[in-house]
Image (cartoon, rainbow, N blue to C red):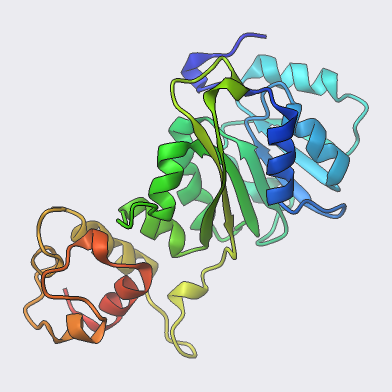
Length: 259
């Protein structure tokens, strides 16, 4: 069963890394797990030993058949042949916070997958993803510089890098190292202010994208803010750039400024 480069397949081979993923997911006997891109099933097998139910979504027709045969005797497993970016969790009777996503995903779908499930009205309670190391570092802003991606994730949850995973633990070996990324505390509470008053998600991300439109320009210029009092109120310097603002400062700006 050869990996398909077109589908971004790099099969995990280390049981020790699989155990790290399971621990990060805090998998318990009553958990429902949505696994994306199960591949040859090394993670699937470990999930079946711990979880109450596993839904494995695989795009590759041959791998789907392989997994169905390999785990034919496992009643707790449902193998679904589908593109995860078109997959509707409700079709498998999943509800908000009623399941966890744990997966070694194709790296080219990382940002799309995060957006799909974090913005969804059927959100998981926790996500544990194997992603490219550099992408994980950008999400947690390890260098102290935020990005559209990091702000987009932090508006919905708390991202944390669990472990760096060298390329040698995959087959075929990718050209980059990977990392186990945990996102917990997933909710839309960030967009609620006081009582019934809320911040519009669309307005928030429109402002963030506009703020990052020219990275070298000052945030006040990108957002065309003439009254700098709102910057002061949010603890933002007049010479600050978008990458220097944390998610709470973005929230403050969107709440108080008109742009």
